Amino acid sequence: MNIYALLVALVLVTALLMRGYQQGNKKYVIVACLMLFAVYGLRDCFSIGNDSSSSYLHQFQRMPDTTWKQVTSGGFNTNVGYRLLNKVVYQLSKGDYQVFISLIAAFVTVCFGKTIYKYSPNPLASILYHFGLLFYLFHFNALKQSIAMGFVMLAFDLLVERKPIRFLLLILIGSQFHFPAIIFLLAYPICKLKPGRSFVILLAVVLAVTYTFRTQILNYMLNLYKDEDTTVASMEGITFLRTKALIMIFIIVAAVMFRKPRAEDRVYSILLEFMGIAVVLQTFCGYNNIFERLADYYFQFSVIFIPMVFDRHADREPLFSWRFMSVVDTAAPYLFCGFSIYRFLTTVVRDPTLFPYKFFFG
Image (tube, rainbow, N blue to C red):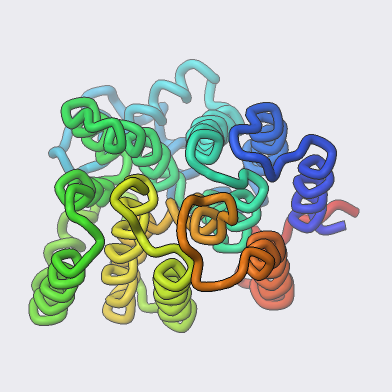
């Protein structure tokens, strides 16, 4: 039995038993996140996931030969927080990499669960989109960014509640694990804009500037991102990256059609703006896939935004009948998740170069 299909099945069955499709269902969110953690954090950390054989493992194993001075040296953009975490966990766990992986998995899962519990109108749908958009598998090969994305999710609360100092502090902490997280600082001034004409103009300006100065911006970003464990980003997977940009555009178009932003829908409006920022960044993955890393800090919120788009309980004047909205709200996450897992199983898992993702029982 393939573990990913089994995990989705368990999430679905549990949702039916515990009404996991109801907003604010804390018990279901906790149980579902524990199941996610069971695979993500308790997997064989030496054979499953790209982080099992990449620089993450090698850096952790080098900790006995790395002094505290070396760990804490370097500038603001050298991921010192991640190196410090390596050193501390290595010392406390006596070099147990499984403990290291499990702690990161627990942190990321808690941040994800807290966010969907508080903001998603349908926790089950959010989890299915989490699978369907491959965010779950992303955490198997991007430990530094996963931690930083967790801090960004925590910072989203502070953005909504308008607490700029604490928001700034959390983003700065997250950037010490993965420096590109600093781009989420733009979210605070941007969220004050209304997703109307001014926002569209701003996106157009950003698009024009990014395209005009793409070479200079790319070189600057690569210089910032480099550290002892980072190689120059490759151009592999460009078809997938561009497809992801099309998915983002489709989400924005669907949002405008199904649920136009209103002044009272502040969280929804903010997330719609996030999708706009994400698509601008993702569009330029054709030049280098480091743009995808930036886009994901905003696009990760699509797991709560998409259920909001199709939320049939939202106060609005829909362009379509309530019956149609109900069908879409119910069927869309299942279809999207099912198709994504099918594509994953028939392409990625079968690729021998990506064997670490081949996670099977029996």
